[in-house]
Length: 217
Image 1 (cartoon, rainbow, N blue to C red):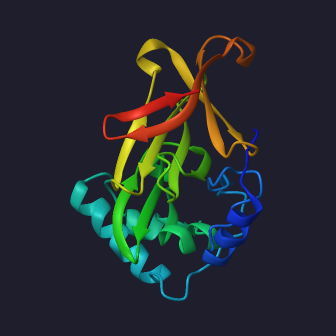
Image 2 (cartoon, one colour):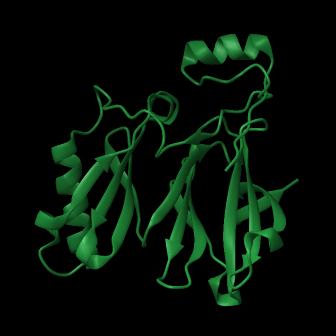
């Protein structure tokens, strides 16, 4: 996978002071981050691991997303980076319950639980500014199924605090992403599930607005 970045030197200096970490070639955009591979932190004023675990378990129970003794089986992994905390006050926890095939992502903002993205295996997780508002949004890439595995994406918009899904499995197509560290955007492709990745078709850069997931050139 590839990633992207671009901005002016003055903007870099200003944004580094504010914690945004914009690079000299990013055009003012926030750098794309591969969250799973990044260095993770526990914010001093954020939600504690114990509080997060209790909140998430209560949510799963209330929503009836899992049956059985999931509280003792639930595994929590903190995925918060310094950059997304300083920029958007985002805290992320990966939530896995193996017997239920659950690999979820819990999102907290300023210590408050705001969203849970459920599904099978998380293949990748990226932070990027998808609506050009200067605040990090999230893109989750998921693998689904056994044998023939398909993929789709879930997007969390920080400004709207909503989860959007782009899924072409009903058309027997995968959704593939390729972070671009030069442009600080995320490229999206569609691909026939039964075909190889060399047949993928470029859709555009990933974006979001009130209408949902959009693609731009």
